[in-house]
Image (tube, rainbow, N blue to C red; front, top):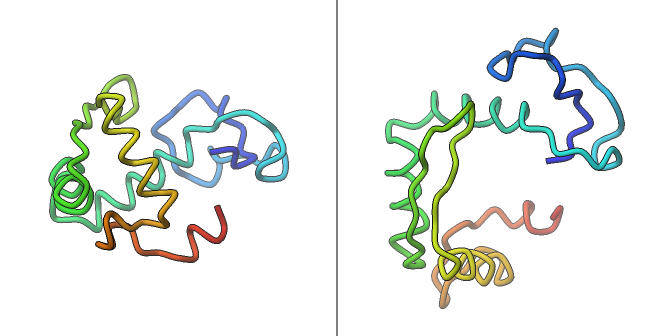
Length: 114
């Protein structure tokens, strides 16, 4: 989330290269930048035939029992959930995407980079 991009461009929907201005090396500025998250969501939305909630239910909820709902609010898809669900997510991340031996998020490069 600390991409090094300047998030003060004024248009949170803009994903043109003119709107994504370099500010600092990634991970060094300490500011959370949402613009890159919006770009990623836009790409995923075009690639998926399911809604973000359907995708989440299939890939994570059905495996972990993690309950929650993405609701679009003020330029963001906010994930509303209970603390117990986030604890489940944390346990899954600690186990590198596995839940009781069942792979949920299996990109091992992601966990290595993280």
